[in-house]
Length: 134
Image 1 (cartoon, one colour):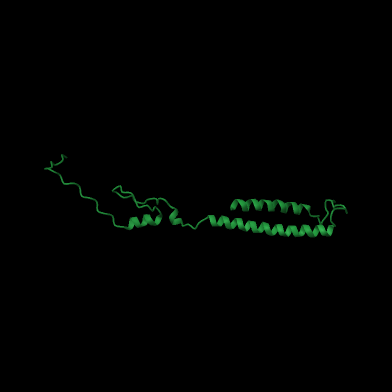
Image 2 (image 1 turned 180 degrees about the vertical axis):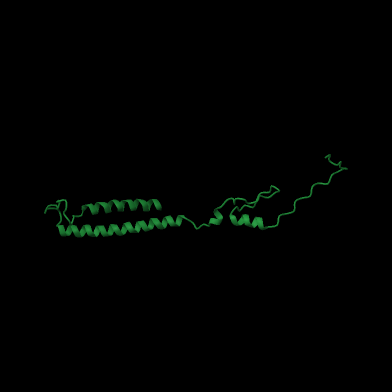
């Protein structure tokens, strides 16, 4: 859809440039007033070109607004809290377990606020222990 609107927009831009360049200069600073001949009278040409310029300008604004709305719809609403993958200084579980699937800031904070399971006690020795030498 966006490509179709861009192509239409480019065609409108080219037509607008051509129509503006075809119009007769009011100042006549370059001395190119154009001859008296032509397929239309100067008044009829001015009316047609003025009307064409107005229509093409309206189409230009419409396609510009359409393109901006299409670009806006592509960007979904997002949150900066969901975009962060890892928070610096966030503690990883000591038992090596994998954290939950969510890895946003809020998920890390929930994980930190939950009480951690007590670490398992070391295994009891199976026999008598000899004291370590100092």
